[in-house]
Length: 228
Length: 376
Image 1 (cartoon, chains in turn orange, blue):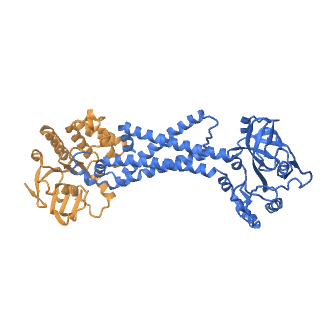
Image 2 (cartoon, rainbow over the protein chains, first blue to last red):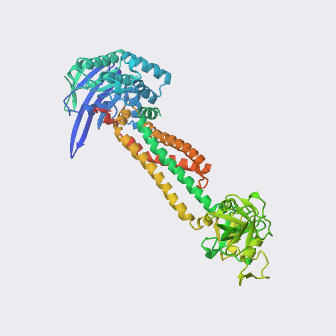
Image 3 (tube, one colour):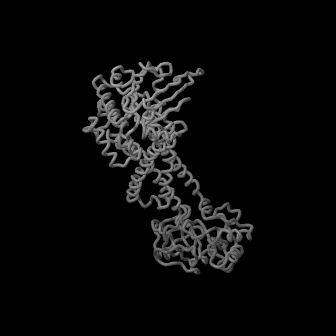
């Protein structure tokens, strides 16, 4: 793979938690590169460190050792403010069960992240309209999350993740709360977006059905990623 | 404010209930403040209205006007030291008067020079002349007891009678309407009564002891005057007012109520927003994960608190305005612009303080919470 095109690079990541008096090593020299237009699935049994991996890849947690680079930018030495800025502009998160803000209408979920990133109002409005249209939510723009079905919520979350044009998209169990056809729908959209815009995508999942949509499937085992 | 406003729009009932509590509390704050000010004014308006910078009382009077006595030579010496037009003698005596030989009323007899700066403005009738004896200028409140221009008030203690020449407005002491008399009358009043008949000759007018000397001038100059007279105490207007019997007790209990209301409003806001914040910690985590800074979220919470407090305050100001229009005249209520501004400012400040706990909680909300959560 072409190194310069790698959007997300994790290099020799180690991380440990102190659990009571014992030190538990979760990640032990984990490395990963995800290139343009590539969608990677990461699986593993619960407790294998998937959440820790995602937190570190998503600039939410600083690793004990190793280096994370997002779109070529190393994260080490960045303060909380710059990390938040980076998450806002370069990263798109899709959380388990959508996690939309309950008091914002679908369109406003998107406008919020655009505002946070300082996108001009008119541009934000046009972009959110276009994204929601493409994800089949054109008619649901003014609906509150409580009125949406599970699949609609997850699609709204995907739209929110794409809003600021991130280089890397990180999804945490995106199909966990969906039935099979809806899950397939969501994965197809995620895949199409990654390919169409040449972005990098990582899906953390233990849902077997997801794997067929991904270019590579990796298993988190003993603190490292191995091909399935 | 993007988040703050939309959340309030979405949970209207929740915030409306909160606003209702705040309206009631802030209304009570404003109302009790107005009452305290009104009572304070009704109690001591005659002293409040005196354009004096300070008062000289005798040292052993414990700040009480009624207990103070400055003998004529002492008063004369102060006058010399203070300079022309910078001092005014003040005589005070509480009295019970008979109105036109019929009903009785309480009055605070105040002796001031009718041509000096302690003399109250006359709102009805004529002013006194310095040499007038047997005449008085009454506070308009005495009208309720039957006083009228040309009517006669008789002091039950000394037996002296005064014809009312005019009325003044808002002049009272110890919740008692004031009755202004001239220095000449004061001398008559102070003349010792012997065997029921007033002694013929005796001291000339103006030599009677006064209770206090009101002074004007800068603090340094006034200190210098007081230093020359070892038996006197230099007091500010505020000190004199606070020593009026009952004044401090009355204001103290009202101030305590007001202070408690501020604490309650801060507490109610703090608890309400704290509980809301606890419920929303997951959301704050998600917002942080997708890139919202702590500052942005803190501003959002503080914005909600201030918006709610300001809106409630505006509503209670309207209520107060309406209340004022239907308030009976006998209820002393005063709320000038300065007090109003200060009260509103303090209320907003305590509200902001109430949001601090929530802001700390928001600052500690962890973006990591967003990973692996199943609900927002």
